[in-house]
Every structure is written in structure tokens, then in C-alpha cells.
Length: 466
Image (cartoon, rainbow, N blue to C red; front, side):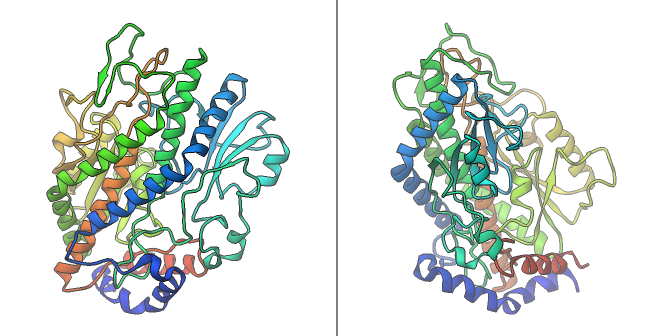
């Protein structure tokens, strides 16, 4: 069976699974409209509503978390980040991440941690009781892959038992559901369009912003990752809406939140570009091709890979797991398309993959930061050389200049990259429905759901069968 044929039979064959979703959510996920208001705008409205709810109800907990993080650093403890639900399996952090203060350490292992340490985790931290008994401070949040999520009765029993809330010293509610997606599109078997990447990344940077402010106020400094320009304490800083150095007595998380919301609004100044991206991707999928999502680190590669509430026509390409010089490392052909997610425009690894994709004949789309300090870098950049680019609203640098910190902290590029990807996928769906005469592409349930893995395997077998 060809992939194209498989796509066309999915809505009917998965009608039974659709009833599980509608029964669980009732009126909460009313059917979203097709053809009246663009799906990307409907999705963005729901994202902003979720973010505003978190800000309005969880700001006190987020600020308390910032103080605990700062206290842990000052007292010589280690802050770990473990499976905080900020996208598909990983958060907005990696070696050399521009604007990230060196506070959180990855790869938490309770055997190596000590009393006085701190761990930022979601319900996927299975040994919460052991961690708490050891005197490690737990900042938690719900995850769709845990019993802390709303509608846990849909989850496999062993997943329902994975709860972090009873053990957390501080719990940041985010209204995560067991199904994950925000959009209920007629004909699709599961809610579509995850939000955990956007919400998780936003809350992490909100906490880090004020943790750094508190550290600076107490005379403590930490290094800042990345290759953005360094700043001295005597430098004049005038950056976006934040003029000069931050005031150490004023909270920063609201400023970060406001800038994220402004930039999300600005995504729709590029709505025409997003629609073009959707058209190209829909054409590729309907002809039996694959829509690849590339990023050097997890980011978009993870969002494109069997993502709960994501599409079965997408595949992830991980730049840190693939050698672009290896002819056998990537199966893509001229019949496929690739969306490159970038957080800095002239990254050498990203450029090497760009060259590989173009050599293979793929259409190359890029999303993300095209500027550094709001200037387009000289020489080669991915946005300059891709066929289409969207992402004018975000930048490579962090937002805030904090006294004693060598670089600006807290970028928005990761949050906006997630939002741009899912808005592009909304445009893909609309174009697909129009071009196919009413068919919809297949989508994934979470593997944590009852029957979720069987559904995932079936999707993969249908779409991988040439």
C-alpha cells in the first residue's frame, strides 16, 4: 500500500478511537472550525489562553521557585533539570545554548545527588518518594505522561501510578491533559497541536529570569552559555522593550512573559508565509513524500517524531545524532521536504545540514531566529539560503542584561520555534483538506494512553509502507 493511499483511509478506520477523545473531554474540546478562522489563529488563541492562565494562577509558585533555585546555588547545592515537560522529551537547554545561565545540570541521578540539591521535574520522575526522602527539593509540574495529568483514567495503569504531585515541595500547575493536544479537528482521531513545549519553555525561562536577578542582587554570578557578545558593567544596553540594565528590585518574569506574548502575536505578520509552508508540505504528503523536521538539538526534531497530538507524515532529523557527510545517514530525497528549526542563523552545523538537504534536492524551509542583536549576520545564514523562512519576531540573544552576568539571559527563540512549527502544521492540515477534497492526515495518540502504542505502531506501518 502506498503512503498516499494509507493517508486516505485513516479517518474511517480510526473512528472508534475518536470517540474516546470526545467522551473524555466533553464540551472542553468543541469541534474547531475549518475554513472560517485559520486553524493557526485558533491554535494560537488557545495557546495564549493557557499561558495567561498559568501566569494568572501560578506566578506566586514560579517566583517561589526562582528564590529556591537561587538559594540552592548560593548554598552550594546542585540544580538538576529532569524531564520537565517542555516539548517532546527534552527542554530548551543544551551545550552552548545562547542566553542560558549555567544553573541547571541535566541527567539527574538520585544516587549521585545530595541533601540540599534541587530537581526540576515532571510526573515522569518515577522515584519521587526516594528523592524526597533524600532531602532533595522537588519542583514539579504535570505531564501528559503521568498520573498528574487531567483525565488520568485514559492512561495505562502503570502510567496512572506515576505521580509527582504527592512528593513535590512546590508544584507548578499547567493544566496538562492525558491527550495533550488543544485542537479538536473534525475527522482527526485525536486532539491535535501540543502545547507543553511552549508552556514548559516559558515557565522555565520565567523562573530562571528571576533566579538570576536574585543571585545578582545577592552578589552571586554564574556563567552564561553561548557565543553572543559579552557585556561589561559599564556598557550601555538598549535592547527591545528593555532599556538599560534590569532593576534588581523588580521582578523579571512578567517582562519575559510579556515579550513572549508580544512575539506570539507577531507570528501572524507572517501568516502568508506560513500558508505557503503549509501548501508545500501538504503537496509533499499527498504525493507520498515525507515532511522532515530538523534541529541541531532536540527541539523541532523531537516535535516531528511520533509526537502525541502530532502528524504521522512528519519525521525528525536530529543534528546531534546524524553525520551530514555520511551518505547513508539520511534517507530523504527530492520527493521530500525539510523544515529546519534554528536558534541562531549562522550555526556551522545547521549550514552543513542545509548543504546536505539541498544536495539531495529537498525543498528547505527554515523557522526561527534570523538575527543576532536584531542585525542580520554577514555571510552565510540558514534563513538567507533556505527556500522560505519564517521567524522575524525572535532573536538569537537573550532579553535581559543583568549586572555581573557576562551575556544577556533568557532568549525567546525556543518558545517561538515551537509555536511556529505547530502553526505551520495547522496550515498543512488546512491545505491538505482542501487539496484532497476533504481528507485529513493521520495523527498520533500519546503512547501513554490505553492502546496508544498500538495506534502509534499502526500509524508508522501505514506511512512507512512504500
